[in-house]
Length: 156
Image (cartoon, rainbow, N blue to C red):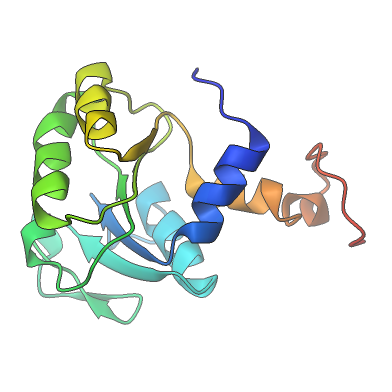
């Protein structure tokens, strides 16, 4: 697994406001659903992307079929698709969002060539990590569940 410093991950999550979640499910027991829902509840503007769910409403927004259909300037694209599906998603993200800051690939999702292409355009790439888990860990929420996060805070 690629190592990322806590300060690096914290900076990415702090600068991010608008997230397109590719591969989001409407099924509330699926990780893509509860991660996107959590991020929306934390104040991120979440745009759900899934061609099979297009037209439905999730997290107060209409699900769109593709990144090209998102009508917002996205800071981060969060990918919930298999690794082999990543290259065209990265290409679409780079095309649709000229000021894109981050491509985040979920746990188990990695693609070195697509990552290199995005990084060559100045986009930060995080692979094989979950923004929900990292947010909870870095901002002290996992401690409430009894997990030792390694992050010292004054919250108890």
